[in-house]
Image (cartoon, rainbow, N blue to C red; front, top):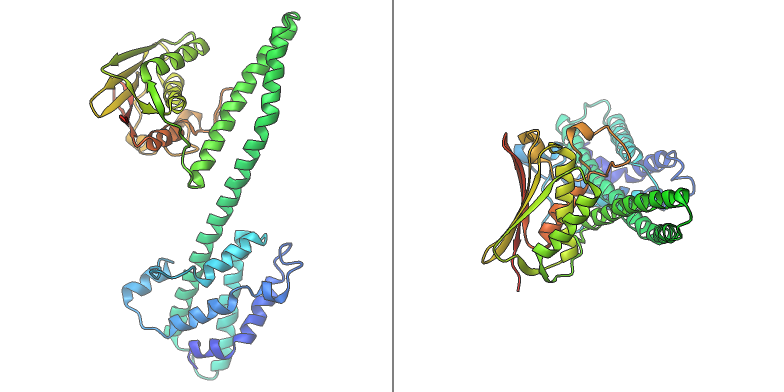
Amino acid sequence: MRLASFILRDMETILGQWEAFALTLLPAAANMKSLALRDHAQQILEAVAKDLSTSQTREAQREKSMGRAPPLIGAPETAAQMHALLRARGGFDINQLAAEYRALRASVLRLWMDVCQPEAPHPDDIIRFNEAIDQALAESVSFFSAQVDQARNLFLGMLGHDMRSPLQTIQMTAVYLAALNAGDKVSGAASRLIHSGARMQALLDDMLDFNRTKLGLGINISPTGVDLANLFADELNLLRAAHPDRQVDMEVVGDPQGVWDGRRLQQLLGNLVLNAIKYGAPDAPINVVVTGEETEVRFEVKNSGTVIDQLTLDRIFDPLKRGPDQENKYDADSNLGLGLYIAREVAKAHGGDIEARSDDAETVFAVRLPRRK
């Protein structure tokens, strides 16, 4: 008997074994009914049987064996994808999801080979069946991972918003204590609270921005008419005050005015300058050059220091990455590795872009912003 016919004929036996195995996947399956345990299993098996009965080219066979079968245009999610979605929402982990497919593969082949006796099972059916299961598994894992990522990002986003209120209370209390002039000890403690609160606020803002981008919402901007020269001068004054041992210069050429979100562009510049302070040569100045042209404004942050190799440059705007010498180092001024990623997202939100280059002379981060009226 060919495998496709066996699957359709003995569907209930196969589903019974699927259900029995799913029931062992604790704790998620502890209180699940039969229908939930068999979730989409019959549709997955029907799709496998249909695949076994359909002719295919060698190239299609090879792609499917690696879980890269082309999606059907206009088709809804497959049974394997929906199964993964519901398993993720039901509390299963990804190892349990993969175990279901391993158990299904073993039980179907074992039951079919018993039925085929004394004849040998058709070898092509075994190959095609394994390819179909691999494809279903790939679809399930992809959807499961996406669902888990989305749930995590939603949780972190809600957590971040909920943390803002108590953090603001701490910061306001620290400012009040600093204003009391109640002695050096109280003033020193208040100063430490203010500094730590500002660090926590920056980390929290980075996390919330990161989550917005991962949820497909992008960086939120509110464009108004601004003068980049004035905005950047204010931001650099704050950075100089925080890092009095570093020299940061700014040069403006042309018209720096346009319609952008000033606060976001200050954040972008601040991230780039802080990156230069952290990784640039400590005895060399950092130069910010703003150039206004007819249709756009460009600005560059330049510093001297160790040359950044091309491999690092190719990934420098990836999220959750830090400098090579900082990957395993944590201190009071450590960050989440989101500064350059958020800088790129802010530029993109304005219809611009950002690039990095590095050689023996200098490292440059260049931002291009279309001028809006």
